[in-house]
Image (cartoon, rainbow over all chains, first blue to last red):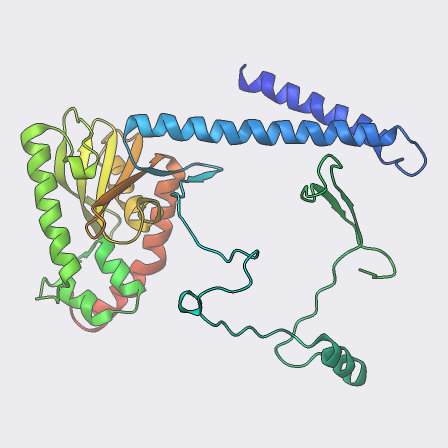
Length: 163
Length: 181
């Protein structure tokens, strides 16, 4: 398929998406809207999976040219190979781990309650503290597996600023 | 009017604020070498020998076969009325430029450096056809290599010119003021 043809197909897909969107966004009033959402998510997953496979194939081809390929600096994209790296983490099933293999790390967290009080009293934040507002959003999970990751969310600021 | 002879090393030292080292380098005065630099020189020699004798890269640099290699290709061009630009390309072979590196940084890191852009400018200004740019890095400590590549684009040369134009005039004025040129 030449580049022009691919562009045409992508344009067509965008058109299809616009059509599907009209139906999908009626989720709360149209029972069938969920199915449209599901179709779109499946399509996205398929594309992502195909691209992942393409990346693996590209890596194999590059290694045929010369071993230890590290990357290509393209005009629009940068491809970089990250080597396999083993790392260790705690097995949470075990309550006791030999302390010889552990090190203590001090973590500072913002005391939200105190900062909130300070902000209310001073109408300003303490020096070195930032405030971020998470926009109200809709998240979608596949129900096949309760452990599934969040796979879609919309970021939309609400007029009342609630997060 | 005497021109200033620009090289990547001179501009890089200047950019890092290492004025004394830049002057020492320019006038070929004795410079402190680190162990890593000396190891790099040995590796460079080995690569050059293998290319000349066998028309290929040594195995520790990937072993790629070459067609008509020109190792350590020194190029000097007149950049403008004030500057000449000089550089030594590690190897040029039929539209391919190779830069060999040793050390910790990956080939990809070096590929993004201005050295690569300056060398591509030198080659193309001298009318060497340039299609592909390779950086091959050998990590002596781990005895491993890696390679990265980019295709030549005219914008690479534009970036090289921007780099020169942003640094070289300052060096020129300094050298002129101090009576060094």
